[in-house]
Length: 248
Ligand SMILES: NC(=O)c1ccc[n+]([C@@H]2O[C@H](COP(=O)([O-])OP(=O)(O)OC[C@H]3O[C@@H](n4cnc5c(N)ncnc54)[C@H](OP(=O)(O)O)[C@@H]3O)[C@@H](O)[C@H]2O)c1
Image (tube, rainbow, N blue to C red):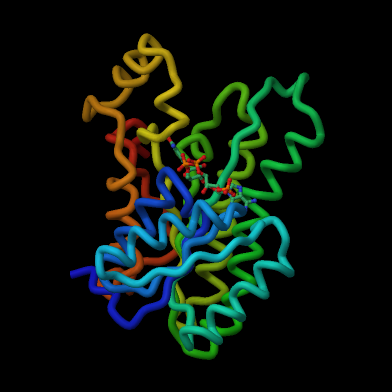
């Protein structure tokens, strides 16, 4: 189950938080894993940790909002490993504010990173995946993309956009054996959620039927499944990993 031996995976936003755990888990089940973020030294630490455990990872720096640089990254991964089989578009940022106070810059940074970044990645690997007639594209959205959130118009729009991008990708590439799916995490314990005051955390937990904040491993396990051969008949879907917070 979830054996990714002989697969090559690119994971964006792998320097910390959810992306780091996704990279570690995907490498653990056999994929040669390319850990990507803007900070080379941070992803080098993650790749080193993976290699020390006997699995295979390399680190590459890339600002995913730049399509040309993402294209070059994909090309050098193909030259180094011979293929790209899995792309996890995980990198994301928040720049929260009320709409009337949100600057154009904060709108653009979030859309350009979270949504355009995933488009850039998808575009960079598509030609290769089409030629090899297989591939897995997994986009990390958010429950906020499904239900919205006051103060996060830019983030909610980017994450809802990712769901549309996933469906279009799935329809466009299905005939070439490529699947595209989305994961919408709820509240996951990371540096971001650790900073929340205890009172707010407790109020959040009350909205979660399973009664706890999620762990990065909960998201990573879903990624490993969607990347596996066993998930070959699933495409265009959005999976909430949120302890039951949002049920449709
Ligand atoms: N934590 C949650 O509760 C939660 C809930 C729902 C969805 N999510 C989503 O899950 C994903 C990961 O969240 P997280 O909490 O783990 O975030 P995080 O800890 O803030 O990590 C974000 C990652 O993205 C990278 N990144 C940011 N901008 C980038 C860019 N332009 N190019 C390349 N890499 C970039 C960062 O590295 P550098 O700064 O070095 O570039 C870092 O590795 C995000 O898409 C987030 O929206 C999180």
